[in-house]
Length: 630
Image 1 (spheres, one colour):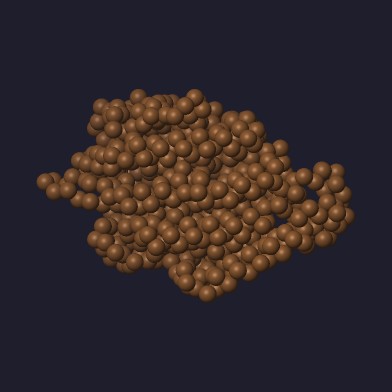
Image 2 (cartoon, helix red, strand yellow):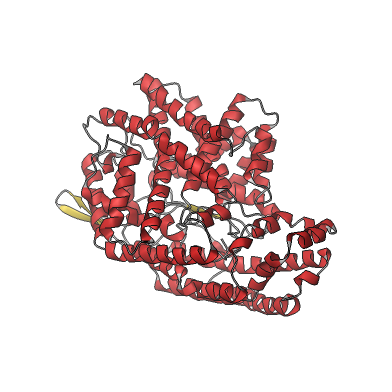
């Protein structure tokens, strides 16, 4: 994502960027400053492949040049696209791409700097100033996509038919024109574009800085431990139930004391979206995201319907078993990610995590492993724990002329290893798709999760197939089921929450209590009768960054997981010749092909109602195996 998502143009890049904020490799506080797992130092990325610092003369020179080039581009071409030949139009798109990539490099650097330490006011000022400058420069380019969309279909087809050079850009033009019915006048588009920095982006920044500056008070015996939000959430998977409960209460109190602020942010952004959706004539709140994902509303509806119908045989059934394993009549929300009684609570050193992931990738494809290895050979990963750093994990594609960067918060748990496998999948995908160039490399969010979830599955299957101890195998299966439930059931519940919230917001501003009621409704529906939710869980919606940064993003995780389950099943069946080669071609395609074209070589079709059932059956099969083992 080069800057705030421009409308009507779809987002260029698809990555786990929803939580991205910025970066600084300095540990300035004792919070989270304990020795890293295994005692080895955790890697911190070096952003100098983008720019050396905020004061780097190259950054200022790039922006100055982009501004001059953008003005010249507009002076030469605005109002004249209809009269250009196919060859001339192709040259114009190539020039547009070149200028946009310069802006993308600058904005990527600002985002990563801020993600590294959002507590530092200097980073916030730098990011905001950079965003304002990039928005101002890109305003000179805004006419181009708007004017392209005003070309009649027949006229554009004539140009494409007569120019091989222009035909290369057909996928980008195809995706651009999805937004044609929702395009406003040039003046309105320019106003919305320039006001973005004081609108949605400003609210995003407020959310990021608030989360980054928060500490959570966790009772530890007679003492109170202050930790970051990330560290507190990590304690929800602690073996000691008392620790989990104390952490859960601390998170509830921390967010509860700020719930009016988070409610204001949520209400404002939902209303802002409603206004834009109404002006752009989107039929419902999720439609804009679906257009950007190049997926039909009906396909998303089929996914959501299939998952919700499967709650009883998936999450309800599994958590009923888990309650028995833990010796509890009912689970509380802080028991959801609790380790099982026999599970080893060992800390996995970073080098072991790296070796595990790369070995799993290598067993499937030496080429994938070789590309993935570059992230560890070079300083492209930030895994260290420190205050102010963005929580969660993401892979940022930056620009094809550079390379992606990965951010994880590595606590040494098995889930952290799987997160590393997930984000590395994104990184490898972004490297391969980068061959398409800046405008054609961006993958819709639904397909962007393919490589990440496939990387997770490779890592899990490699470990599971090598395990001969029945008890260890059962524990590994249970852990994988929980990850899949978090990816599929939980994300569809999140999507359902967003849908209800945005629908209700259209009737008027929602109180914190009303938002909490919607949250609790979807949690009870999705997690089932094994849980007895305490009232304080009603604040937990507030820490989910996707609701703020990328409305209706979350179903892409479930889309990707079910898609990969089906794809991996084809791979295990061994009935598709040269599966590895076809899979690499899928990743290299970037945004040039739609999901129907990408899945066809594997005999899969996401528009088939049974497609989603096939993916969900994989999860149900794992739960069947657990029931038998128990």
